[in-house]
Length: 306
Image (spheres, rainbow, N blue to C red):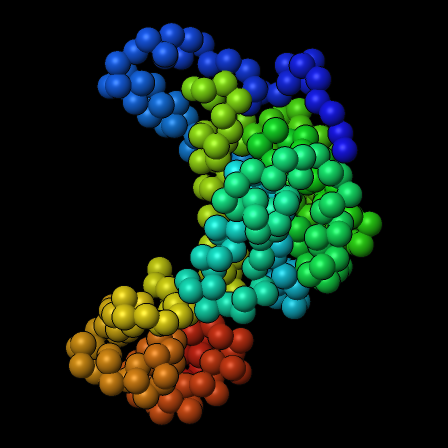
């Protein structure tokens, strides 16, 4: 277990005091909210400055996933919860296997809903948690820590390096230790929080934006979309079935009835249904072409027309 001294916090940008909120405890509700909103508007600007590193990270993730690896998020507290949130959302959005994108949080599942004291301070725990999912050199690890110094995340990134796995760090502190540990280091320097040290606020928002980019751009590159439509959506409930029907209508211009009947014939696979309508082929032929072209609908459509 590691210890933190007051002097350590003085060098962490996200632990510094925001000059515009020194008297926030004396302000009206409107002024409090205006202060928070004003601070939040600086977050996308900080993320934009990290776009070159985010781009490099997406390319690393795409390469590993395309070669049979997995995307693993690792963090403690808010950072860990955000990683799990992004991982969980990939499954219904892109119909990926449950194991392809995973999130690990210091302290385990219990830490999702309550603090697990000391979990983030154990530098050896991440290696144990990664071993439990058979993390290996084909995978890519994204270590997330607003402060850039969380021992649990440092241990995870070191473990990934020892295994020869690809690694990415996401922090909000330019002086964070994890900024030197990964193959690609992303830092969104969002500055002091309106409530000093409350990194669930601006830092958490920045991390969410970055994780959105990492997973969404990687899935686009893997052929999980057609134009800007989520054609690999898993139609597992009534709302998603309606969305799948709308996707087929939007992609093909057919009417709702044809979209529905075609979806039913393809077991609610929007990609196959779109290909059936646009290329006027059978569901079996659509399935064959998609498999032949690694799930890329545009490529399969072009092959059907040739």
